[in-house]
Length: 111
Image (tube, rainbow, N blue to C red; front, side, top):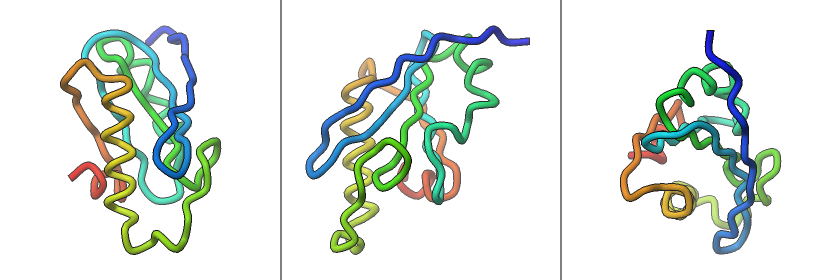
């Protein structure tokens, strides 16, 4: 059984808002990207196991949980804006390279 890792939670300022994110573990960065109306807690059941080998980063996309609201007038640019948010998040938490896992809409943003 995996041991429980320490969670460091922070907020990153992005153009037009802020993103809540959590970091745990050590090793290469692994960004877990939730889909749909999901947030940083989506992957909770597997994070500690992954944190044994990776620096696991999870986040609340705009408009969800602890992150700032998403402006509906930007709906046509949502994928572009969310992808930029992830790029900034990786720049903040990364070591130059990262592994990325996206679920559903999170995978679309990752691509």
